[in-house]
Picture 1 (spheres, rainbow, N blue to C red):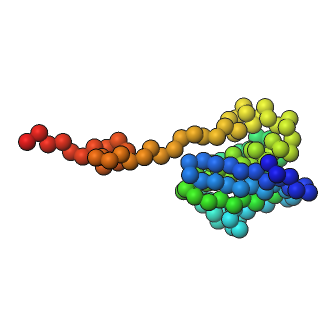
Picture 2 (cartoon, helix red, strand yellow):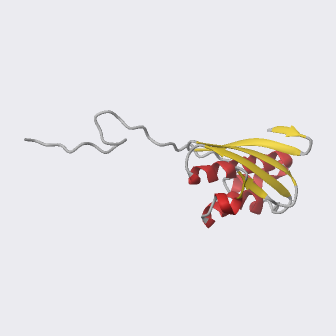
Picture 3 (cartoon, rainbow, N blue to C red):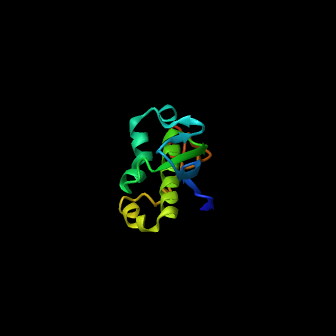
Length: 132
């Protein structure tokens, strides 16, 4: 939500991943942690998830995206980048809110990993019970 001479900086979060997004006018180049999008996210479904805000708002090729992502795994990082891009596009043009809201691109996914409890193997799995 910070604006510097023609560039917008936003934050997106998902699980334990945090993505800082810089959106600036350009040719549509997307960089994640100083690597090309195709190199950082090898799975096609993750790339389409990241591009979905640009596709929905019909702004593919109009903005360059620079993403810095930390924490979590690739799936969480892809979700964080998606939310950050959506928020940045909203800062550019507030008329895009209805399109982004309709595809649930502005909603932060609140699901987190449940913690492990003492006396159990994992969060919900128990040790084997022995009667005798």
